[in-house]
Length: 293
Image 1 (cartoon, rainbow, N blue to C red):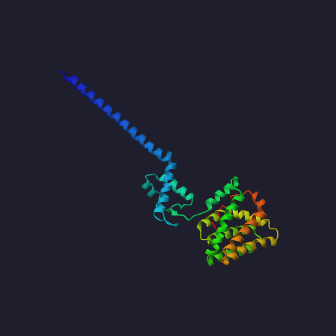
Image 2: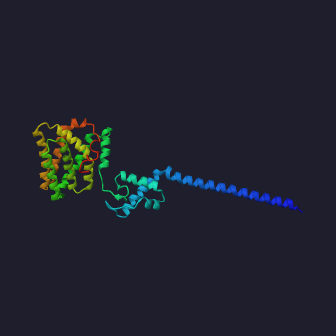
Image 3: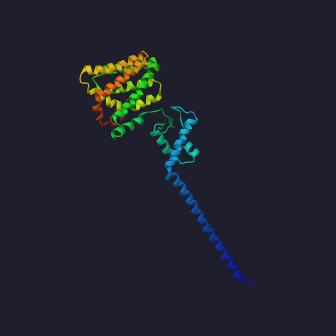
């Protein structure tokens, strides 16, 4: 028969082993929870690029699925964060990226809104291509000519009286300010953009808007080369020929006149424009961007 002393000692030893085992298991469980928490945090922040991309797609899908239009309000970061199960930091980065891409309008203290289509981002890319010798002036002129011939043809049949009046007014402004290359360069860019808008194809208008900085610089360089009034008047006459054909709703004559304008510009200014180093300034400074963009 076991003695009471031995039995009590055995019980104390068993309790100690159980307590030690419980502490050990508790520590292991805490470690596991900590590891999971760290992994989750790393998954959110360490690979935040993929989460942000998912969030960006989710916002785009929301706009599509809910039939949102420019100016419509979107839910805030918290809504999307709760729906996707991601942090506010992820949604803040996603909203910031969408704002930079001008897909949504993000203003401090206000809910985001759906943005209008904007060609200025493409314009930045084009100018960057020039500055880094990835794109030539001939590349742009070929694309512009292709787009503008078709836009002019469509404008000649689709334009409204108000759109025709706008185009006519712009050409008159070019004639009035023919001695000011800076103003002429702005009005000329607006002239081509107005025709693209009159085609009623929003993509034509956005492509032409994206070319506006290049168009302005090229026009200014070409206009400065017109050293006599007769040379400047010739340029105005070429623009008026396009307007007259659009006014008559004659797509063939309008297209021919636009083609002549491009061909003459390349023939007369190619060497000068090909050597030009394009710059972002001043066309992307506040208050200096063309009114058409």
